[in-house]
Image (cartoon, rainbow, N blue to C red; front, side, top):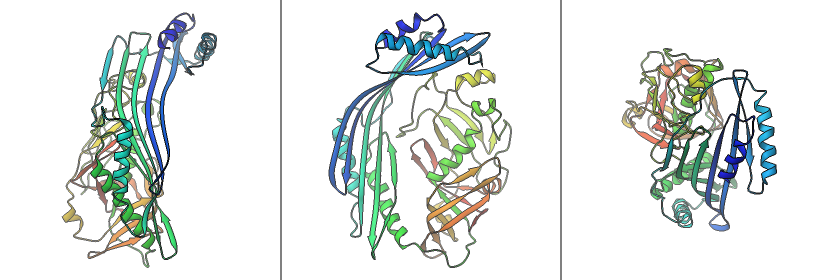
Length: 425
């Protein structure tokens, strides 16, 4: 297929350059209702997308199309011509494609070489090891195990491929007591199979769905620090870092400029963020981006200050900045907050939120909390039907980061953080 595509693309007079991306996926999927295996699906698929470039009038246009195994030569010729004509009416500033690079690599994983069926079975065993409560159960479970091979070819002699493993668990922990049923949704991604870690994660969610059933609305207003966990922290920090992406800077949609103090000096832990191409156990790890650009780890925030931008090669060239590639992983330096210090005073820990809302332009952070743990200085009380709200700048200034790090998909950083300037409503 690739050879045929290259031949047909080379014959079109309007196509200046091209890029071909393929994703080969070998997958094994299992679907459970309670502990009963209901469906198994095994697939081998190849997805192919083509980008054509047309240089014209000192500009560069581009357009995309997909190719299917059933496409005849004539259909592909028509798709190429349609895309080329579309590219001719797009007037992007010119930029260079990466060229004359080759790579064939595998991202390390302890799942490599193990049959996908066996990996799925081991994952299911790890999940159901946490299904140990009389009133609780895993109501539904879906497991997706994927072996991926991603390749990129272009007209400038670039040919790169990488293989990696990616897995996801979707589970519905459920609690039934006193005539009531409560559910939580859990999505867990990984690229290294660690059964004990999976069991611990699902067991934690089982306890949380139990506490969601027991949770009550506070009888009076609470005034204490707010604690966010890694799931919400990853969203918060991605909102900050997205404003340092080359594409945002070029479009003038960024809230921060280089040199800006994103986190004002205060009594919190300084924020230091590095965008990385890979993290141990992360399904988002990659060696190159869709353009085929080799990814370069880049420190973008140091001690609360924006020190660098990052992003796709096209926008890096427009801004005359270093080419980092479109990095997908993020590492946050842990802080100084210990569990011992945390438990010295009351705090309100958000466990499950509808979604953390962050607005860097209007200096806002907040959201609806479906389950929280309120530590009153002696005991933990499950609470629900609460919201949090505050000024983002004030929250960051007082932020204390845990000294314990965790990996959650594309995030590696503190497992929690404490904020003194967020109100509990």
